[in-house]
Length: 93
Image 1 (cartoon, rainbow, N blue to C red):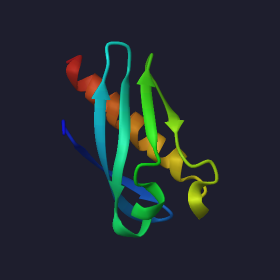
Image 2 (cartoon, one colour):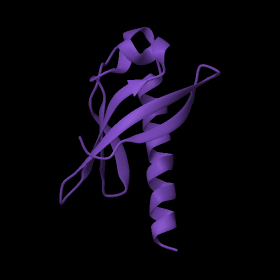
Image 3 (tube, rainbow, N blue to C red):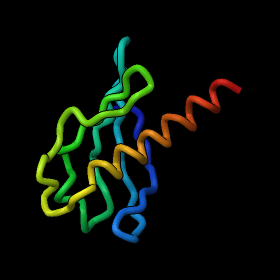
Image 4 (cartoon, rainbow, N blue to C red):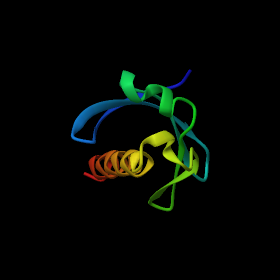
């Protein structure tokens, strides 16, 4: 297993932690959401893969109906986008 990233995320007025495995290719990076804090883990595990390409992050694999958690994929996307932006900014300094 390669590098793992742990990111804090706010969702429904609670703080959760995402465990993400990035997989780089020459043209993009996929971010596989492996786990999240216990009460959302069964709703997320193995269901969400986000792709970063051309400075955008978007969902390429995930549960459409959000498994009873509307807005979850959007919040994961926002958290990833913020992480990627901060990483890019720190590399450009």
